[in-house]
Length: 338
Image 1 (spheres, rainbow, N blue to C red):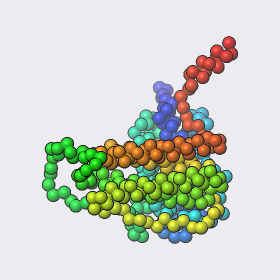
Image 2 (cartoon, helix red, strand yellow):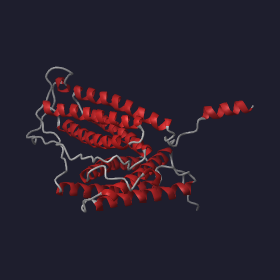
Image 3 (cartoon, one colour):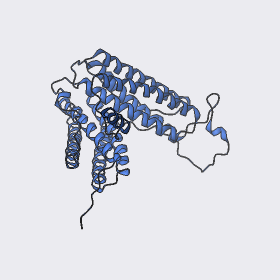
Image 4 (tube, rainbow, N blue to C red):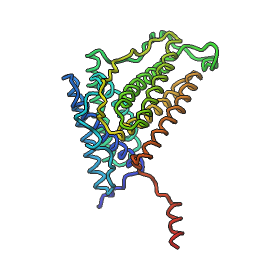
């Protein structure tokens, strides 16, 4: 009996394609981190992350080759300068790995859940397991060094209660109820993500070769800064604890460790992560003022992401993702031939 092996689906090819592109970018970033890392405790974590990204690229390459799917260009040696001076601190490297690890866990769990073919599901299961192990090791090292930023604390609940009044949902003005634990958690997460993003963007703005692209990164930094301030205010209004600041040291180097293309793509990926986090936060927040706040930032970050996409297109750097056949275009071509 001949075993039928179906083609990979649109969901599978898209997630594999995105993973391939993302990991080729990560290889460039991690190579520079490894080259410039000074802390002997941090280097092994970077090495593991680099090995995993290289493995992912090799495995997806094999699968695409077998399926007859062209490999994306992604990023390579031309997009990283290993001779460039150190731009970020070793603590920033750890926080970056924590941030990207959390993103990877979310992405790979989604990819597995929407994949049908067993070999593809197994691949994403492996990617998830690797990322989980890396995230745990990174978290443990951050705690040992005293730089792990925990979500804000709240008092333990001492009884079970039910909501009986609609004013629980609150309004845009006037007195509002105290924040729920889950609302505090999402504010904390978004503050931490924005802190990572603004540090990376400020560094990118310092080394970008194009003034227009440098200005774009600076705009992103200012947006992230405003985001942190607004989310902090929500926590402070209720006298809640809030995430502490962290070492976001950026050196005085102006040597670009990465190409403008890579830094622009990286920023687009960060914007997508932020938009996803806002959507999850909206779904978990019951206070109207929080929902309105997140919706406002979805619009602002969405507009920022669109500007980034335009810059990528204008420079010929926007690699086209897999898409369905444009039937209308084919029809028009056929009519012209007639």
